[in-house]
Length: 464
Image (cartoon, rainbow, N blue to C red; front, top):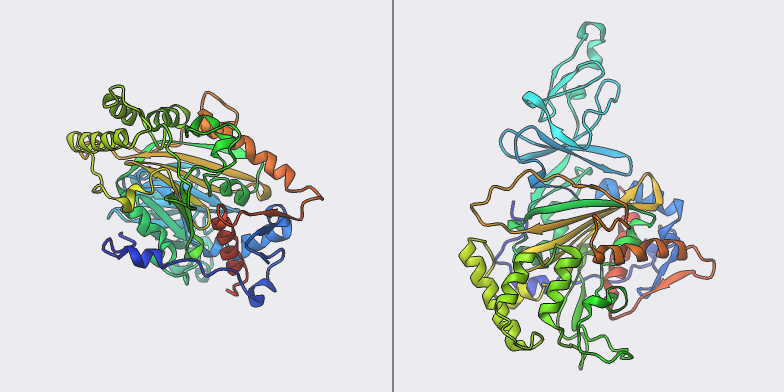
């Protein structure tokens, strides 16, 4: 489905700014609430009370990215999505649509599928007693039917239960609340921005996971800003700069949007800011350190037009961009037209509330999904995707996760994610210091962190 009309005016998107701090009506219902956009109470990252409230008021009622569409290309293909103890099977239907079914036999609760796979003959079979359902959840066989009271095995009672399920941008989204607003409403305006970057054309290049000793919110917030690059990723800070300069030369604008979404992208955040990095060197380091936002094919294009030029000059950048668009056209790779409304997102970030991020670059994107792990506020599952756009003639294989790897595993994680991961567990240990009642946010650089927390409080204060 198309979540947002592609002709929606940019002004409408930019007008969808966040509503700001909450009032007493919300704050009174939420422990450790946000009483200032410049401070986040530390307990939000480790309190069992706060975590249980998220389990009750957030996860059962919010749209979540549950799968990539290419994980389930054919009818009967399934992938399991788990969140705070709730397991759902995301299943491709015979008509090409997708359903999300609760992963529990209606007889004695046996799990019906795990991880990913395919239901042979488009039938879901319970491994315990052999009850069967169609892949749309309709019951087809009750073994030992004669032994049951007919009132207990009515079709409407023993067919598998569904969650809401919709698709956008190559993703499958689920919501366990059937009274929730539509996906279109929930993702606005973030989906509109990403539509302009043509993320719907992108497919999985690779996909991996790490288990990290860090709260899910604290972990994802590390990517809500690019301000940390100079210290965390010094190799990527290719601006011509004096060693002691405290000015952030990245010309980045941060925008908090309604529904808890956020964005940062290129632009002059403050008069006098905005340096000129070495474009080619940064591209090489991005590819070798991550292999996601910038790929080897992009580097080859950029190298092909360097010819001894100053690769930090606007003239070189313009030539590199033209060569990239020419390459896409020649290779049959679909792409949006050249224009600032999507090119300004390159190297930026879109956060889709509550826990999914996309960082588009060229016709690629890095993507993160962060969720709680093992019913523990101190741990998270951190998944990373490299997405790219292939030629239209390319047959995309079924996407499969390469595995779960230790955060320090240099054979499976590039330098950039290992540098990021190194900060996360340190933050979780530090957040419990009795000297620290709250974290302190920069009004200029970290406004989208505050916005995410303010939206979270509104969700936690809702009476469902």
